[in-house]
Amino acid sequence: MPLLLGACEKQDLYKFNICRLALPGVENTGLRFHLLTRPDIDKGSDTVTLIYQILPDSIPYHGDNDGALSDDIPLLGQGSPAFAHSITCQFARAASPGLRVPLIGVTTSRFGPLPDSQLALLDRFWINRIGRSALQFFDDESRTATLPDVPDIGDKAAFAAQLTLSGLSRGAVYALLALPFTLIYGLIGRINLAFGEMLMVGGVAAMVASQAVVGSIGWHITLIVTCAIVAAITYGAGLGHVSWRWVFGPLGRFRAGGQAMIVASLGCVLLIQEFVRIAWSARNFNLPPIWRFTLPVARGGHLIVNIDGFDILAVLLAGAMCVILQGLMRNTPYGRAWHAISQDRFAAALCGVRLHRIEAQTFALAGLLCGLAGAILALRYGVINFHSGTMFGFKALTAAILGGIGIIRGAWLGGLLLGLLESLWTGYFGDPYRDAAVFGLLALVLILKPEGLLRVNNRHDSLLATRSP
Image 1 (tube, rainbow, N blue to C red):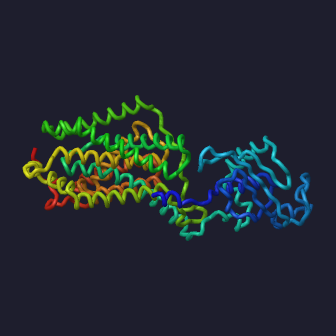
Image 2 (image 1 turned 90 degrees about the horizontal axis):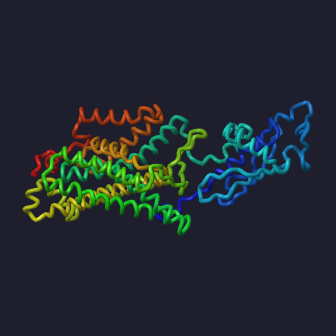
Image 3 (image 1 turned 90 degrees about the vertical axis):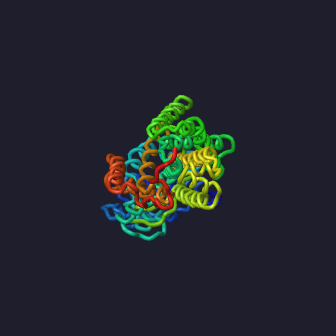
């Protein structure tokens, strides 16, 4: 992970683009430009200088006063219309790496410094409103200067590819959160609805740890992400163990039914939410962007298909945890004990399996996975609040049921499919009915294929078998 975070850095083209967009707004109306400066500006500098030429085919060169740039603004310096000019853009100093900073000054070789009143008008009415339309005043080479050297697959294909990549990253988070449902249901045959709140606690812990690192050590991306993940999985695992020790463990010893477990898990949801709301805040927890790495893979015209750094991290962590969990369940004493309890609790106890110990470890492992998912969400989106985990929890449960609850591969498959469905639906149909589509899919799966896509193997897995009390 340090290599991934530390090595995947590239030039930030934000300042170059802002200065390029400002140029037509500063210059005379109708001129067209060719940039001599390439977009390899030092991203750590607060000043960007672009060298440009005014193209001879610009509108003022073919008017009545041929050869004059303007009626009232003289040309500063000597030379032909191809004479090289410069524009220097001054930006405010960023409080932290990756933040978008405002434009605070513009100076050109032709007109000198831009007055503050004109700078305000340029920023508000040209850069913010005209935006990318200002690129029409540049030649083709300058207009595409910042486009990456990747295959052009067309607008529609690029749009679909971007939605697919976004869906895979979100699906990886759903897969991580679906794994706890699979672990607990596979062990005790019950659903714990509090996993979404454990994700929320993990996200809050990740944000607090990140801000603590920034405040005490500085902006070190690898250390920030590492500390955030460690804090999230620690709080998540601890909360998972506490929920078993004080809620689900006693209910199991008293042979409580499924209804009692559902009501108890809803009580845990409300308790965790209200504790976070009262102990910390009811407002959003916000984290400034800490890593703006994106990897371009294709484009459709000016639409660039990017993979975000945290999306890569989410998919890698989710895949790694799935592989680790598969190995843990197949090749370790814990995995063998888990399968024994899943098949027959009474027989497992007669064979010396310590039921309560395995249950406690499973709840702690489930909480760890929730914390990891929360850390990824907090670092990726930078905002979380005391009730944001509830919807994620229900959607992760949908993913577990979709893939086949009780099967690790099913949780992974269901999470990815759900993430893709959300992303593609949002891209083509908008947000309003996205959640309705997700839970409509859940209802459809429960009606047509209640065992899930991968089905439950009743020869080797006893989830369909009657459980001993």
